[in-house]
Length: 554
Image 1 (cartoon, rainbow, N blue to C red):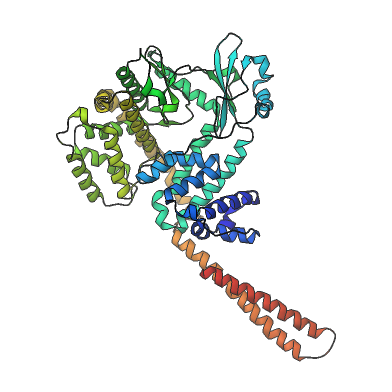
Image 2: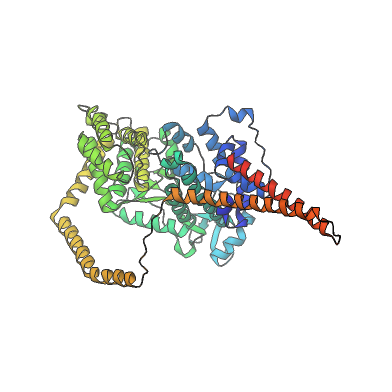
């Protein structure tokens, strides 16, 4: 299984590390089921299967979190992505994933100097008037240093850790293979869509590794708020920014985690409204939003301004998806159960589930909020409850929507921290109406109709050529029909293994019979020795067959 799927011996050391950590935290059964144990046994690696008592007392979510922390930056980032998937994991799992902190020991500045010289084109001292060798923060992918340009501008340098990309790429290869094996060999975990989650995660992590992409994201958000001076996005200094280095303005303000102790001069209610307006504008107006607006990425500045930093993780919502989101949220605010159920069923159309049961439960859930005043409506909790209903039915949201809902719930929590009477539903209502009206405007309808007409015409224009290729392939006998049935492939693999064992058993029997005949003939010249060698070969083949059968049965 895993041994055959590895394909590259360079990953075997990392496989051993992963397997050892899983075993240590009590997941030895998982290691055996996905084939990691057999791979390591063939490589001569020994695993110790005892489970320490202190780990055995931990609940599974806590043990999984500890595993992710010990396995390093790639797996910590994976856990942070899983923390956004309330549609896949129950609250206790989401809470544990939310505890994962992207922190790492700081590297000495001398370890970064060589890479900085390569990226800057000259010594850092020649570019910056001041550069603090002590980092402001150290994370798994990068660490941040304060500096000052020659003109006095305060900046920060976000420097990627040297050698981190090969480690991440190796982990992503292994995660992709493990997800494929888990989906095939463990049907009870298939509902978590491991391959889809890993694809989303790999795409997001590779974008985070490119610090120039973070700069482009920041500039795109800054352009959205170019006419809104109360929203601040750090300026990117492109002459020194690249894949491994990001130089941007330093933000001097009060971190969001200190919102409960804002000094005099700050209007907490105004800050809550401005923050909500900014995030809703990103999500519903631009369809391009900060996907991780937690308290560490938000600063409050004098003049009741708000600054957003760290745009390494962003979400995207195309126009059609924004209309669906607006329809869903408008249905929740207006207590329109059928509208909410229709949108959720469309989102989970590719999942297997009882549509009528889901519709009935959604309608009963929304009806429970009938008569609740808009100000008292906790829209974040409402979305979380809707996601929980999907999870109970074994349905999953598309990844972009999972990020959006996570950002929305985080937004409401920060708003209520600033203002206990914060009304997220009231703040969202104008944006929802604007999205709905824009989607139904005559010009938008005409544009979508024209695009649909062009697509239909292009399809009809290409139909004769497609039919011609099909007929030519049929005449040449090259018409092929591909049917992928995973169960048959698994059955074929079992047949191959059984045939191999049968072949070895026949060879063993032949060696025994042949050697017995040879041993009865005493003609000298080493004939008896050949018979003895035949018996030795038969014993070895027999042992191989027995071990193979025993391990296969286990």
